[in-house]
Length: 481
Image (cartoon, rainbow, N blue to C red):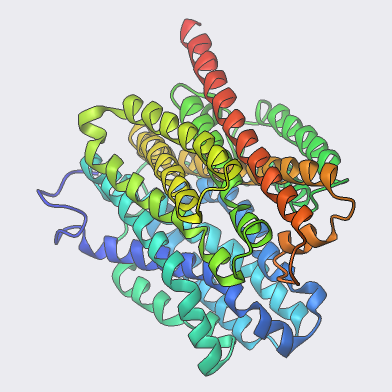
């Protein structure tokens, strides 16, 4: 997009689109992070508590699938039209969730809401590449990260107040005024369809293969234990089947060139390993604090926000130094910081240092993740043609989501493997892993959880180191060709 003058993302020429993007991100972030606070009230009111996890999982599955199909939709219809339709759909689904009289209907509403949520977030990321000049791209992403961080801190608290005063439906109904604000500012502000954009071709077989891959992978993560390896094996087979399919159709939903093309290979691979390493470690920090250090449920739950704070700081640091230091320096500097923080975190946990030092390590882990992911995401936007920015962005977001999925799976497998070798009964640990507070953990189990968390941090560090080395080797091989 042509630069419309000096100033930042809040300058007058960009203010409407900035407010629309940030409000939409706040809407999606609140829905993703705050709904957990409403789960007990939902279960007490609607019953069918066996379906309660699907209030989260159903949203996660469809939002991840939405990222896959978002690219061709955005490129074909433009950011503006896609924003309008998906925002209205997301807000309508939120209202349906609030009115759901039974748990199955609430889960169904969350499935629809997740698809809309995935699309509106994809629109916001794609809009950065077409609504701002290149000099503001990194700053726009940093501002989005700050909104996610604020939602992480304030979302659960706001949701708790809403549940206490007006009941759990109010958590979903809050999306209505937020959506209205986003619509007022973004209805006309977002860029329209790019001239010469390709018509939408629905790659139904590709969508089915990738959707099956996502579902099977999430099953592998959600059932850490005997089904993990079989699920991941099936997932690998589905991924191979999609790769074969993508090479034989004219317009696949996820094109090979946006996965391993020049530049994209490094960006996608490093986003994958950074998300896998950082989120794979952070996902089990509450388990460690509850099971090994005896903290309260609420303290442990909010501990994951230290990574969010670091992530936000890393994103802003990238926006300040990207043009001065260059993408590669920030990328490898952030990788080194992330690797050092993971190794340092493992050492600190093993040494049983005071909890604030452990949390400081996770602040640095977040700083590394934020630096790496912001640097590569900015370069994806800058390297993509306007007519394909939706597809390129969708491919990159897909690999970020995959990184989280596999990082959580590997970290959890390492933790439970170590714990399983030290204690006879894993029920207490599985209850903690599922979020059940339960009673006090016996000393032997507490020591086993600590050792398992060290193993998880170590595995995440190995994933990062091996993944980064493999990425460098692969990029050099492609350059040599």
